[in-house]
Length: 292
Image (cartoon, rainbow, N blue to C red; front, side, top):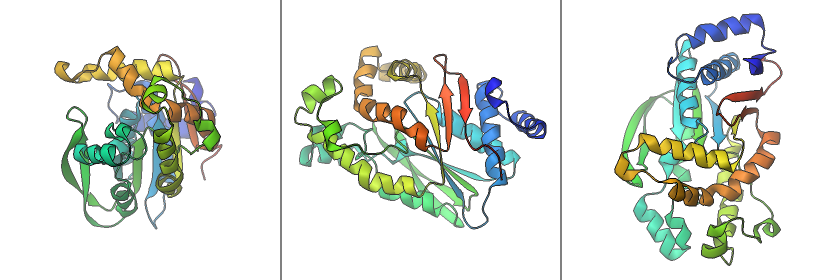
């Protein structure tokens, strides 16, 4: 794979050995990428606390697939990983309905900053290094509600927090003036919702990003790819609960502004940038020039 050029022959052998232990049905380039990242983190592990890694990227980019592969790859190098999905920390349906009544109707829809329980999420990220049991939520997107809680046993050597908006930064008030799509033009004509979302990005979300040690950004080719790949994900859901192309396009409008901002600005700030091709393969990997 061309994008893995520059890795030493010794490291390539370790990557290959690790790959042999991973799910053979997973995309081959994601297997290699996971092994490459796991090798890096195994060499840079801290005995003081777990490394905290954010996995960011648009809908359908493969964040969950990559996170699970990284977890499995880390086992090969002797690291125990806690995988956290930002989506699991969505507020309950009842909580979002209350926000819709009290603050803005668009907060009823999960996704945008302001619809997560970030307090719980931060406690999980910071608590993963401690021994003992830790309670985590699980969100059912088909029911659009929190389904259950599960317990995991610490301590962990590495924490992966995967989510679409990880690393996103607020923009100036002036950048919010013009709507970017029909959702903003019609349902947020006064700009109040996008201002609220932007403010949340600038405070508690920024504070969560600040405690992460590294961010891996899955750089999608653009919004068209997000719509295609998000629609593809619907195939794995029961027929009665699947969104069609029109519904997916409408749903992606909630994410459009921040996704486009991330594509423009996050490659400069992320520690690793994984550029994805239109066919979803890994085209290029940019990251640390050497392992310590």
